[in-house]
Length: 291
Image 1 (cartoon, helix red, strand yellow):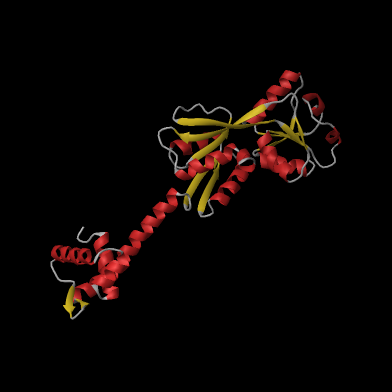
Image 2 (tube, helix red, strand yellow):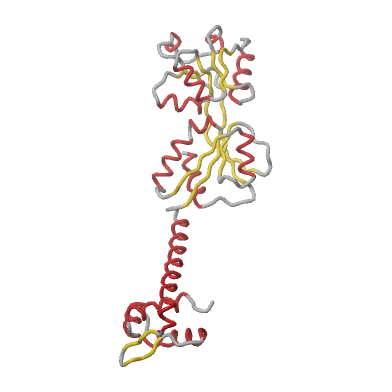
């Protein structure tokens, strides 16, 4: 480097103020330090920067040519320093998340709201996919954090258990079963049931609960996503039996939900790549999910 940032800063002050004394006051250094620094800079550059005329320093043609570039370089250095401080203190940047659709409609929105309130200058990228897709995004370093339900089964991923939620029922408006505090498999026998696809964790647990109760599970409408199942129940198609995370959004909208008995818990899990430390933003976001 021909000129150090300190040399460029003192050069700018002399260019703008015209004297070593004024430059020293502006830079909060002693006058001999300014003179010595400029002399060292001139020796490395191989040409004079200033000519002394009476009590002022007059910039040479070379100094006039360098001045705009030095100002631009100092502005770029200041930008990098401010960006570093902002990233360290969580005032700017990008947080990338991947989650299953159920959690995207359930617990994630509230956590993102809290996070944005604490870090208004930070952008959040949220992607939804199957549990397998979420795990792959985490392993491939394409997202900071992932959220899934159920088992993970990948040793490359560090898993942290979050909250648990239980299966519940979303009732159409005015449904007679709303008079009950909780619903069982026997109560739901003969009702038009709405559920997610058989391979999804909520559906597998529902199937097991009906088998243990000795009641055949008959699904009237199968939805690819829990949000679709909620919309179908709200339209009066039938009763949606879903995990508690999927019901969070419906409950916020004032829709009628009832717990399913006996309780069938589901575990939400936070994922991060085991061999990479989480970013400052990810570390700030994780406690908000836990809350």
